[in-house]
Length: 244
Image (cartoon, rainbow, N blue to C red; front, side, top):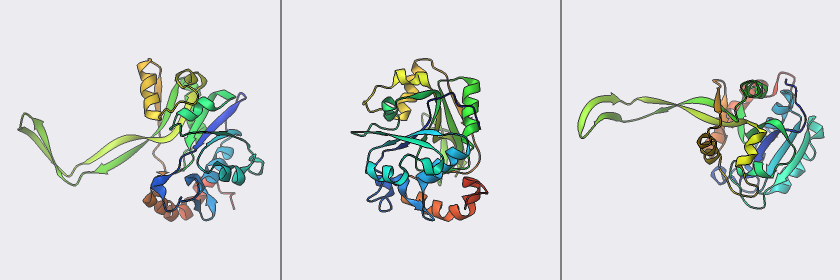
């Protein structure tokens, strides 16, 4: 839990069309695809409520009415939900420019992910460290099925057979300070990588928050199939032992 200081505490990005998740999201926004009858977006909302976030904006675009119809004002989840609708796609950071009433610090996350990350820990770390942006980060391993030749000018200096590469990747969960809005123009498309580069160019502080627990970005059909396999065993960790 944390002590919010008023204003919108979290923004969920749910405006995308989800073309990579077809046919599962053929006629609905991808955050509405279900796991055991529960929309992924509802899982995220329940987690936010459990970790102490109450005032939340959902940015919507594609088939926006379906998200409004599913969640209304959020009262049934113990939340105060409102919506910010995109007239045209604004990317993964641009929608923030149209959100009014943001708190001094606020969480931003994609509406199509599963994770056991305690959002309040990320949030409190951000407030304590005071950067412009904190990015939740997860280490991913990528196996290479070929031998890697090292060297230059056609001279071989080393050879590594089928290495496993390790990368620190963004989890699609961020904590921002309100001042970031000076770098985001309303109604202008902006993707998150471009925003990060813009902040770094301006010498703003950007940090990452490492997390080694469960995380799955549900962007493709195979990711959704894995989520369906994982969910029965992960339900309690995701939603708490009291969820029925």
